[in-house]
Length: 494
Image (cartoon, rainbow, N blue to C red; front, side):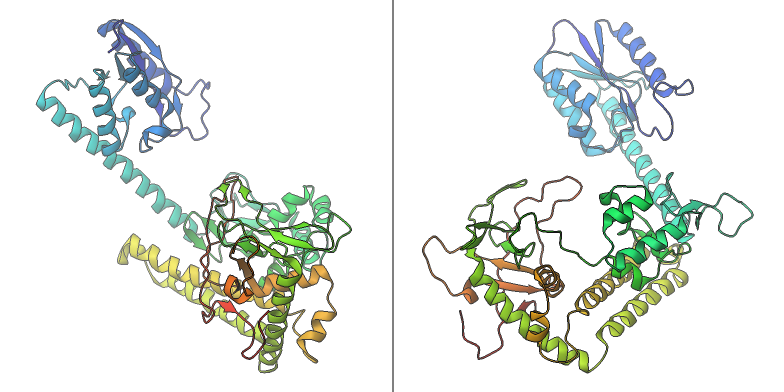
């Protein structure tokens, strides 16, 4: 225990909202600080007031509470004799987490002093009251979280825009007498957004679109993926598919999402399987390397989420020929399927049916009747079905320009350039997975390669929001799995 009696002072403010720490009307931090200083004077010793935790929930674990963590570790290191908080709930609002803090502090010979609650935790009754208050604080946080979630759900159902910044092309209606009060309504940039989606659907470059919208190409691509322009409102897990007036219809929005391969950075033609071929050991995309005469798809081995345990490699020519044979067979099958009915229209009908089902559920079912959890589960199930139907529609639309109406699949394939072939394969496949076999070993491709159909139930390594994707091995399914595309029966193996 610290011999010179230095206390660590911890201040926590749960929710700042629009308040600023240095604003004249912000008193919480000052009030807690004053209470902690008075307590330190009564207890004797020095006070080390740690940086305030602002906008920090009491339900967070200790490793996300910088000041409290520093206080606990300082007591364990002998720098502090204890910690002072203004009142009990500033210590935390999680029963298990708070109990762990008390155990660590007391095990190190320190103490926790609550300035304004007057608890004597040295007695059995005092510790009992402390645990009761801890449970009450946790319950208050849970009630607040539930109220907040209920408000978000109700506001989403009503179509109310809940963020400060509105999407480009919309403004928030502030007219209380209007039926669209607090909802998004088109503004004077709406026509620019309609043009942007139509232009992207026709293949206009994102740089050109960004220049007209006044943003970067990356910003334009991000904007064009936002489903808010379909009239959807998404707040957490809550979804309202008809919250406000859409600026674009579903077919145009979907057409704007089609993948366009980036121009090659060299004079070499683009790799046929760029972005598709993946290492089974780590799940990451393999890249083309080697010489121009003998290129090889290889796993780079070192990724942002770690090192691949067994990198795979395969000759580009051998794998490309294998995939091409399967792709041509799939194109021929799609041609026959297309002759029996409009697959795009069928997929569009499925989307409309799924959306009607979700709308009917949200209108007919009340959370107050079936309970919040049951209501959310039902809404999520229908929203997931709608998302799956939309993905299937996107796939059909992406395939449509390449599916031969007359002639054979081989005829259509020959008319495509390298970028178009890659785009077609991305509409046919989720991934081409390659298992490593060891240097010098010759193994039939059927034994080490799987072509997973678009929409296959597979988890792929993808980084999001700046986070590393990690190592995500892909197990090779059996050849007879419905997720696997393979050579037609009777064809020779490579």
